[in-house]
Length: 469
Image (cartoon, rainbow, N blue to C red; front, side, top):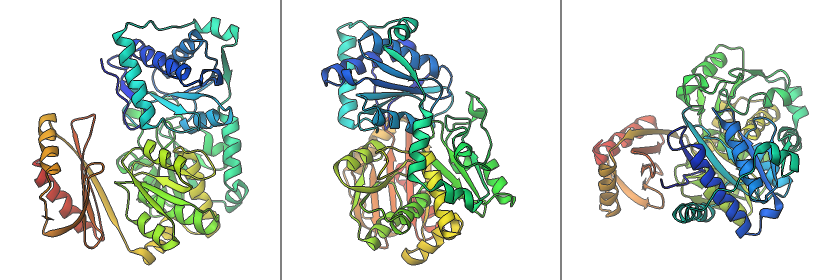
């Protein structure tokens, strides 16, 4: 089979494409890459989430590292992805491997590579890894591995605590005492994932739901989006809590529920935190966002006089920009947000703490904080729909859209377009529509933002007509 890395790592269905044999091929190519780049002597950090067989997959990677003469630090228990990334940075390791499929359904698992800077592998790196896997397969290159017990006895594999140093870093970044003293009534849903226990440990009194180990994630994907957070929303709407916080399966993404009991999207979180970092914490730098992220970030960056960068979808592109420029904050539509002074990595737990800090410093809820900003820059509504589409039809649609020629949509004249990642049509009033076929699935994603929800619905319906789906 052909191994391909997506927006963050290689993923597949357990016992179908994500097997021990295929994992071993990817791990061997990773060790070959470390030797080739002169990084092998710096060692490898290995972590894993709470998915089915994640620990066993991680142990297999550790055995292959040892078989290739590479020392590795293997997390002694499950850990969030940002904790593993922080360990790569703190230990000055050559790289990291995180076994997780993030927010994917329970039947999936995955292999994320973290580079020495403590962030997602850049596109140039994953292309090299893909090529090395293919070359090794073509050459029948053997997988070099050592039994884990032997590797542990030799010291080539060492168990380590990924949590404590990461918690210390979070305590340095936010004012935990201020948050604790504010007495905010908060409830967190880690969605049975690797973020379980972290926020209550830092902020005693926080209520946690879905914190037990459950590899089926309660029968739903561990993705903190509105349709999966009904229970969390109900708890806040019931009046007992002021805010709800949610983490995805490996805790590198965030979702939230505001004081009204309504879903508070990543666009809104990004907007509130950008203002918090700039105005209350005094952080300076540029801003980077993906092509599908809210225009509120553009307007806020303009208001503050901050340079704005836009990238294709995928945090690896944001990470690359954070490495190349002085970036205050970067974020994407799917809930991945990163900040200056940490690592160039998504971190759902840190974002949750920053939201609590913003509430503690302002004395306001999330919706009140957002309204304060929207009253200045304009009110925005956003929606996204995912549609099933046959691959042949998807290919034909891409060819048709690439040819251009769309001058108006739903009666609105197209003022600009951006085809850097999908097909984005921007209108004179700043509203926009993005038609983006998935590169790995038979799925068509439609995104829109406008000043009123009726306009958003109209643009999305017009996009369905354009796509014929």
